[in-house]
Image (cartoon, rainbow, N blue to C red; front, side, top):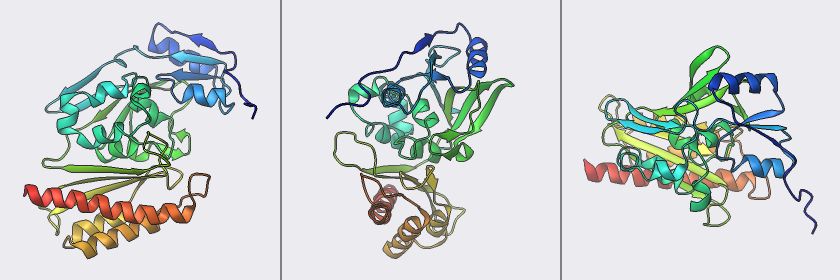
Length: 299
């Protein structure tokens, strides 16, 4: 079978000296210029003819985008150009953000994760992004440079649809900040794909649980779903059930059913909508149960 897209189109590579220069160029060439970070999605989509940009604007290394740091009082800050493997290997990430580390390890191959970035994963706004759920549950906030200066974009309101976000022409995502997670938290990311070699998620379920004396059950659970709606999805009604009722198998099953009823997946070559919905229920039940068991063992 002949490859309809045998190679990349001709692209002009731009290496600005400053954020201001990069932002002005991107704004002046809206629709034909794109910020360039890891490039793992960019080159594939340009090769396949999905993206037809003339310019790639390399923003790696500008104003802290190549840095990652952990502050024991403020949390984790990940520069936009930091590869996933570098983040996953940090002892502070494995200790304080284990759900993020677990999600990173499911992304494609080790070799690809040497290039892929978490901020790039977020800004591509794929509903199937593996690391987005963990970043949302940890309360992630993007730092963005634009025409009006630097602003913050909480992930909770950042996604508008497949490939669509709050970013405007000239905007450059600089870093992602994750505040300190709740004490005693436990996380779990479960993903189903066509194979175990880091394929795109057919369904992804992220669950974060922690002790919380202010709710009736004594525990708070946060749930995020991937690849089952136009945007990465939180399930607040299911989270409320787990906060207000005694945690047992029946309550977990009720929350899992709510998660299933809350999503709106599509049929595609990787799985039917019906299959995805049933997998959401099963995987949510399994993830919440595993988190619940670890929380009670630690209590």
